[in-house]
Image 1 (tube, rainbow, N blue to C red):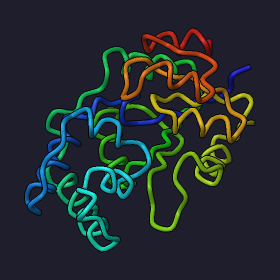
Image 2: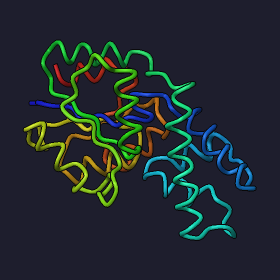
Image 3: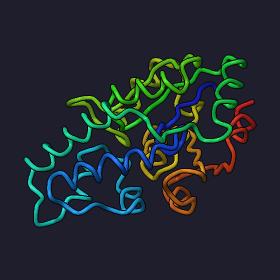
Length: 216
């Protein structure tokens, strides 16, 4: 029996790729580095901003100092710029409202910076009562670490085997597998469905309301 749901944010609830691409390329170019295509940035997303920047900074320019400097710039610019092109995926708001009406406990677990995650959830889903929005915080492990998901499960008060982890990436599927949750991949996000299946997805859904069907 499914008792609760944990959602990833970028690529699962929100279509954020264009805004992320604009911010990252703006920071790269302001530091004299070439911009990246939207697909190059798409496949760099998922393991936190520092890892993203390591993948897009030219190899001959990478140092720990440069990665940290540009990561700070991206976080700052992203917060200041706001969500210009970001939107919920079609059907997501209806799904969340349906689950809330059925009293299904929900949480957000993302590798996006905590403040950015909180602001976006409030902006786009302010009427949804998530038990917790858990993002990247200093000195705290990111997904797919069990240490990232354990506090969320504790707040939800559910067993891993009775909890769905909904996401669009191999990181999300690995998170579910590591914690013993039910891994559900979405086909509309940043990664191919075949990759999600390779990393442990038990289900692939092609529309948000299919998630409600799995639960209700």
